[in-house]
Amino acid sequence: MEKIKNKDELEFAIFCIENVAAYLGVSPRYVYDSITKQSNILNNYILPEYQVLHTQSKDYIVEDIVDVMKENGVISFEGSEKL
Image (cartoon, rainbow, N blue to C red):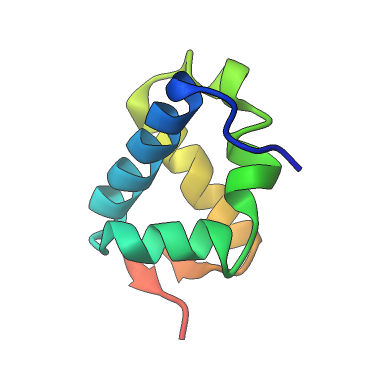
């Protein structure tokens, strides 16, 4: 399990949360809770893959994280919270 190690990783985590929230039409708080409390996507996927992910386009990053959220059962489909 990774933890945020520096300012660059923190800024990247915030970038991911804000852009995934905008893509899904939900609040950043919902995304944060989804990737930290409902799952551990932040520490188990986003941070360990930071070196690769941060070199990709915004669209690729957002769609990749949304796919991981779907795989982890955090969301059932784009733009909708899982009930």
